[in-house]
Amino acid sequence: MLFRDRREAGQMLARKLEAYAGLSDVLILALPRGGVPVAFEVARALQAPLDVFSASRRASDVQVLAADASSAASKGGPAEPVLGLPRPTVILVDDGLTSGLTVRAAVVALRPQAGRLVLALPVTTPAVYEELAAETDEVVCARTPEASRAVGLWYQDFSPTTAPEVRDLLERAARRSSSVPSRPAS
Image 1: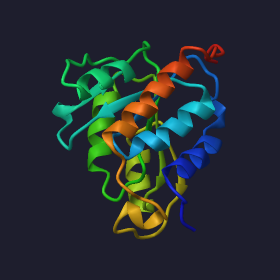
Image 2 (image 1 turned 180 degrees about the vertical axis):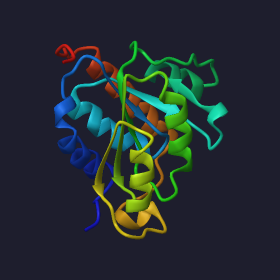
Image 3 (image 1 turned 30 degrees about the vertical axis):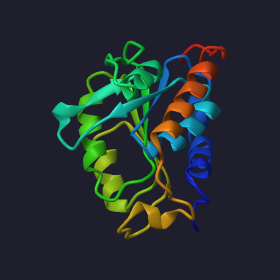
Image 4 (image 1 turned 90 degrees about the vertical axis):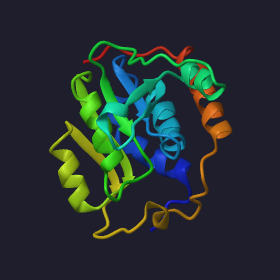
């Protein structure tokens, strides 16, 4: 069964992550660009702040950008790396994985900063799932098909996520998270 789009995939993941809803120490980090629409839905459902986590396949090129900093960076201004909370529960979100190289770089960078590191994905193979489960505290995945050559094969609409769309979602998330109270972490 295919996901209609990244939004539906995020809504499905959010249902699987309900235990984290409303907790004050949860931070949702999206891998750009395709992970942002998925993570936006997760952050909205969990009432958690959303930031972008930029990672290349080399762990030394990893950076966390707050929503406001992301907007500044996209306009050519400086962006300050931030994590926001001391040792937060970090839920790292992407739109799916086949090899997991970029996610592994992000996990290496986040592991020492996160109190708990959760990886949330709409789709990945069982082999990648198992490998990443050994490197994180938890992996939440909606679908684990035996083989997948491309993440886009699991979506009806896998059109590219644009920079303006990313900016819009981050701005909406920032407005929402500044007005939603959260409950203390348990």
